[in-house]
Image (cartoon, rainbow, N blue to C red; front, side, top):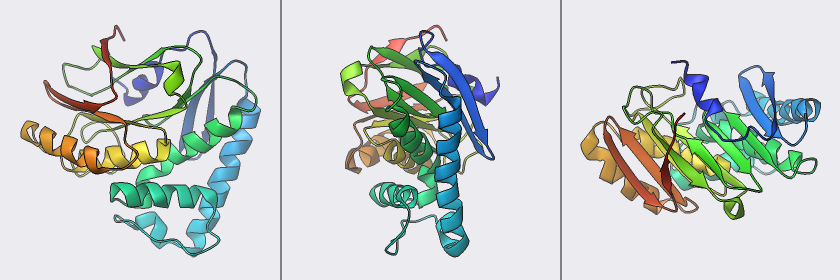
Amino acid sequence: MDPRTYRYWVEGKDLVSFRVVVKETDLSIRAVSNLERKAYKLVLKYRGHLEKYLEVNPAFLTALAPLSLPPGAPLIACKMAEAGRLAGVGPMAAVAGAIAELVGQELLEFSPEVIIENGGDIFIRSLKKRVVGIYAGGSPLTGKIGLEIDAQDTPLGVCTSSGTVSHSLSFGQADAVTVISPSVALADAAATAIGNIIQKNEDIPKGIELGQTIAGVAGLVIIKGEQIGLWGRVRLCRTSA
Protein backbone atom coordinates (compact mmCIF):
# COMPACT_ATOMS: atom_id res chain seq x y z
CA MET A 1 0.00 0.00 0.00
CA ASP A 2 1.18 3.50 -0.84
CA PRO A 3 2.20 5.15 2.44
CA ARG A 4 0.25 8.26 1.40
CA THR A 5 -2.92 6.20 1.61
CA TYR A 6 -3.15 7.45 5.20
CA ARG A 7 -4.04 10.91 4.00
CA TYR A 8 -7.51 9.67 3.11
CA TRP A 9 -8.06 8.28 6.61
CA VAL A 10 -9.45 11.47 8.11
CA GLU A 11 -13.23 11.79 8.01
CA GLY A 12 -14.06 14.91 6.01
CA LYS A 13 -16.14 14.09 2.94
CA ASP A 14 -18.40 17.03 3.81
CA LEU A 15 -15.49 19.40 3.09
CA VAL A 16 -13.81 20.49 -0.14
CA SER A 17 -10.50 18.70 -0.78
CA PHE A 18 -7.48 20.10 -2.60
CA ARG A 19 -3.73 19.57 -2.72
CA VAL A 20 -0.76 21.93 -2.52
CA VAL A 21 2.73 20.76 -3.49
CA VAL A 22 5.87 22.88 -3.17
CA LYS A 23 9.13 20.95 -3.44
CA GLU A 24 9.15 18.41 -0.56
CA THR A 25 6.00 19.86 0.99
CA ASP A 26 2.89 17.94 -0.10
CA LEU A 27 -0.28 19.06 1.67
CA SER A 28 -3.70 17.46 1.46
CA ILE A 29 -6.15 20.09 2.65
CA ARG A 30 -9.88 20.10 3.41
CA ALA A 31 -11.89 23.23 4.07
CA VAL A 32 -15.39 24.61 3.49
CA SER A 33 -14.24 26.00 0.11
CA ASN A 34 -11.31 25.65 -2.26
CA LEU A 35 -8.51 27.73 -0.74
CA GLU A 36 -5.75 26.30 -2.90
CA ARG A 37 -4.34 29.67 -4.03
CA LYS A 38 -4.23 31.05 -0.49
CA ALA A 39 -2.68 27.83 0.86
CA TYR A 40 -0.08 27.81 -1.91
CA LYS A 41 0.99 31.36 -1.04
CA LEU A 42 1.23 30.45 2.64
CA VAL A 43 3.40 27.42 1.92
CA LEU A 44 5.68 29.58 -0.23
CA LYS A 45 5.90 32.14 2.58
CA TYR A 46 6.83 29.74 5.36
CA ARG A 47 9.10 27.58 3.22
CA GLY A 48 10.81 30.75 2.03
CA HIS A 49 11.40 31.95 5.57
CA LEU A 50 12.87 28.57 6.53
CA GLU A 51 15.01 28.18 3.41
CA LYS A 52 16.55 31.63 3.90
CA TYR A 53 17.27 30.80 7.53
CA LEU A 54 18.94 27.52 6.57
CA GLU A 55 21.24 29.36 4.17
CA VAL A 56 22.85 31.25 7.03
CA ASN A 57 22.35 28.58 9.72
CA PRO A 58 23.03 25.21 8.03
CA ALA A 59 23.43 23.46 11.41
CA PHE A 60 19.67 23.86 11.86
CA LEU A 61 19.14 21.37 9.03
CA THR A 62 21.36 18.58 10.33
CA ALA A 63 21.12 18.87 14.13
CA LEU A 64 19.82 15.74 15.87
CA ALA A 65 19.67 17.45 19.26
CA PRO A 66 17.91 20.63 20.41
CA LEU A 67 19.35 23.94 19.24
CA SER A 68 19.20 27.43 20.71
CA LEU A 69 18.31 30.11 18.20
CA PRO A 70 19.85 33.56 17.83
CA PRO A 71 17.60 36.64 18.03
CA GLY A 72 15.67 37.41 14.87
CA ALA A 73 14.97 33.82 13.77
CA PRO A 74 11.73 33.47 11.76
CA LEU A 75 8.55 32.20 13.39
CA ILE A 76 8.71 28.78 11.74
CA ALA A 77 12.28 28.20 12.95
CA CYS A 78 11.36 29.29 16.47
CA LYS A 79 8.35 26.98 16.53
CA MET A 80 10.45 24.04 15.31
CA ALA A 81 13.28 24.73 17.75
CA GLU A 82 10.89 24.98 20.72
CA ALA A 83 9.22 21.70 19.76
CA GLY A 84 12.62 20.06 19.43
CA ARG A 85 13.70 21.41 22.82
CA LEU A 86 10.63 20.01 24.56
CA ALA A 87 10.93 16.62 22.85
CA GLY A 88 14.72 16.38 23.02
CA VAL A 89 15.31 16.12 19.26
CA GLY A 90 16.61 18.28 16.45
CA PRO A 91 14.36 21.04 15.09
CA MET A 92 13.85 19.45 11.66
CA ALA A 93 11.88 16.67 13.39
CA ALA A 94 9.09 19.25 13.63
CA VAL A 95 9.19 20.72 10.11
CA ALA A 96 6.15 18.94 8.63
CA GLY A 97 4.02 19.63 11.68
CA ALA A 98 5.13 23.27 11.84
CA ILE A 99 4.19 23.92 8.21
CA ALA A 100 0.81 22.22 8.63
CA GLU A 101 0.15 24.22 11.79
CA LEU A 102 1.14 27.63 10.46
CA VAL A 103 -0.72 27.21 7.18
CA GLY A 104 -3.76 25.81 8.99
CA GLN A 105 -3.91 28.65 11.48
CA GLU A 106 -3.92 31.27 8.72
CA LEU A 107 -6.51 29.42 6.65
CA LEU A 108 -8.91 29.56 9.61
CA GLU A 109 -9.42 33.20 8.69
CA PHE A 110 -11.24 31.97 5.57
CA SER A 111 -12.74 28.67 6.72
CA PRO A 112 -14.12 27.65 10.14
CA GLU A 113 -12.99 24.08 9.49
CA VAL A 114 -9.55 23.15 8.19
CA ILE A 115 -7.85 19.75 8.04
CA ILE A 116 -4.29 19.59 6.71
CA GLU A 117 -2.25 16.42 6.31
CA ASN A 118 1.48 16.75 5.65
CA GLY A 119 3.43 13.49 5.55
CA GLY A 120 1.41 11.84 8.30
CA ASP A 121 1.19 15.00 10.41
CA ILE A 122 -2.26 16.55 10.75
CA PHE A 123 -3.61 19.95 11.75
CA ILE A 124 -7.33 19.72 12.45
CA ARG A 125 -9.92 22.34 13.34
CA SER A 126 -13.40 20.89 13.16
CA LEU A 127 -16.93 21.83 14.12
CA LYS A 128 -17.93 18.19 14.59
CA LYS A 129 -16.46 14.90 15.75
CA ARG A 130 -13.94 13.39 13.32
CA VAL A 131 -12.13 10.06 13.17
CA VAL A 132 -8.46 9.91 12.21
CA GLY A 133 -7.42 6.45 11.10
CA ILE A 134 -3.98 5.18 12.14
CA TYR A 135 -1.79 3.84 9.33
CA ALA A 136 0.74 1.41 10.81
CA GLY A 137 2.26 -0.24 7.74
CA GLY A 138 2.32 -4.01 7.91
CA SER A 139 0.84 -4.20 11.41
CA PRO A 140 -2.43 -6.19 11.51
CA LEU A 141 -3.92 -3.17 13.29
CA THR A 142 -3.64 -1.02 10.16
CA GLY A 143 -7.07 -0.10 8.90
CA LYS A 144 -8.81 -1.34 12.03
CA ILE A 145 -8.44 1.48 14.55
CA GLY A 146 -8.65 5.24 14.62
CA LEU A 147 -8.74 8.18 17.00
CA GLU A 148 -11.97 10.00 17.80
CA ILE A 149 -11.39 13.76 17.82
CA ASP A 150 -14.05 15.94 19.43
CA ALA A 151 -14.69 19.40 18.00
CA GLN A 152 -14.06 21.11 21.35
CA ASP A 153 -10.55 19.64 21.46
CA THR A 154 -9.56 21.35 18.21
CA PRO A 155 -7.42 22.98 16.87
CA LEU A 156 -5.27 19.91 17.47
CA GLY A 157 -2.20 18.22 16.09
CA VAL A 158 -2.30 14.48 15.35
CA CYS A 159 1.12 13.35 14.19
CA THR A 160 2.47 9.91 13.34
CA SER A 161 6.04 8.67 13.06
CA SER A 162 7.03 5.24 11.79
CA GLY A 163 10.30 3.37 11.62
CA THR A 164 8.91 0.86 9.12
CA VAL A 165 6.87 3.04 6.73
CA SER A 166 7.92 6.67 6.55
CA HIS A 167 10.87 8.02 4.61
CA SER A 168 11.48 10.46 7.47
CA LEU A 169 14.47 9.86 9.73
CA SER A 170 13.72 7.45 12.57
CA PHE A 171 16.11 5.36 14.65
CA GLY A 172 13.36 3.04 15.85
CA GLN A 173 11.21 0.22 14.50
CA ALA A 174 7.72 1.19 15.61
CA ASP A 175 4.99 0.60 13.04
CA ALA A 176 3.33 3.79 14.30
CA VAL A 177 3.74 6.32 17.07
CA THR A 178 0.82 8.76 17.03
CA VAL A 179 0.92 11.79 19.31
CA ILE A 180 -1.78 14.40 19.92
CA SER A 181 -1.05 17.92 21.15
CA PRO A 182 -2.48 21.41 20.75
CA SER A 183 0.83 22.15 18.99
CA VAL A 184 1.24 20.25 15.72
CA ALA A 185 4.97 20.99 15.69
CA LEU A 186 5.34 19.48 19.16
CA ALA A 187 3.25 16.43 18.26
CA ASP A 188 5.54 15.89 15.26
CA ALA A 189 8.75 16.20 17.27
CA ALA A 190 7.42 14.07 20.13
CA ALA A 191 6.32 11.30 17.77
CA THR A 192 9.86 11.22 16.39
CA ALA A 193 11.46 11.18 19.84
CA ILE A 194 9.23 8.37 21.09
CA GLY A 195 9.55 6.40 17.88
CA ASN A 196 13.34 6.52 18.13
CA ILE A 197 13.37 4.31 21.24
CA ILE A 198 10.93 1.63 20.04
CA GLN A 199 12.94 -1.33 18.73
CA LYS A 200 10.77 -4.20 19.95
CA ASN A 201 7.41 -4.81 21.61
CA GLU A 202 8.95 -4.64 25.06
CA ASP A 203 9.95 -1.01 24.44
CA ILE A 204 6.35 0.22 24.31
CA PRO A 205 6.21 1.02 28.07
CA LYS A 206 9.42 3.04 27.75
CA GLY A 207 7.86 4.98 24.91
CA ILE A 208 4.80 5.72 27.01
CA GLU A 209 7.00 6.89 29.88
CA LEU A 210 8.91 9.23 27.59
CA GLY A 211 5.72 10.69 26.18
CA GLN A 212 4.46 11.42 29.69
CA THR A 213 7.53 13.58 30.37
CA ILE A 214 7.13 15.82 27.30
CA ALA A 215 5.26 18.97 28.28
CA GLY A 216 2.39 19.66 25.90
CA VAL A 217 1.72 16.07 24.85
CA ALA A 218 -1.95 15.29 25.46
CA GLY A 219 -1.93 11.63 24.49
CA LEU A 220 -0.24 8.98 22.40
CA VAL A 221 -0.61 5.59 20.75
CA ILE A 222 2.28 3.20 20.01
CA ILE A 223 1.85 0.26 17.64
CA LYS A 224 4.46 -2.45 17.12
CA GLY A 225 3.21 -5.51 15.29
CA GLU A 226 0.13 -6.79 17.11
CA GLN A 227 0.95 -4.86 20.28
CA ILE A 228 -0.49 -1.47 21.17
CA GLY A 229 0.10 0.94 24.02
CA LEU A 230 -1.75 4.15 24.75
CA TRP A 231 -1.78 6.96 27.26
CA GLY A 232 -3.53 10.25 27.84
CA ARG A 233 -6.49 11.88 26.17
CA VAL A 234 -6.99 9.36 23.38
CA ARG A 235 -10.14 7.46 22.43
CA LEU A 236 -9.68 4.57 20.06
CA CYS A 237 -12.46 3.35 17.80
CA ARG A 238 -12.89 0.75 15.10
CA THR A 239 -12.55 2.01 11.56
CA SER A 240 -13.32 0.56 8.16
CA ALA A 241 -10.57 2.51 6.38
